[in-house]
Image (cartoon, rainbow, N blue to C red; front, top):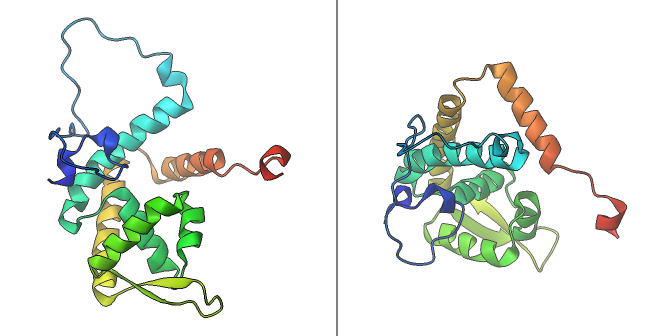
Length: 185
């Protein structure tokens, strides 16, 4: 089954088995209405609602454009971290991307089986293995990164470069919250 056949809302989850195909709506399409317009004004005041709607719009395009590479958003994120941090450990990837270790294990095995990443002994920790892109992994990642850069431009085409940088900076302020004493102790 193709990745674009999965519903956009489930795009971040690992497929667990056969699902009924549900084609994601194009970015610029509006749902057909069968009656009066639905009032979502309160929802549109909520950060989470707006962040989720934006993420779904971007993920819809991402899935369509990354289908030739066989990559989901999380696969691309893992490859990106490995590409920019050769020798990174699974533990470091989990911390950087907020992925649970059991979820990363299957992902790493899948990427390794596809010949995209290699495990090598860690230079300072005998218990750990560093992850590296293989030559085919480097080629695939370069192509996928170019595609990701282009699709980001396309989905954010209504924003100026300054507006986009402001938006990204504001979103980072939300998810990169400093630990409070209650969280760290």
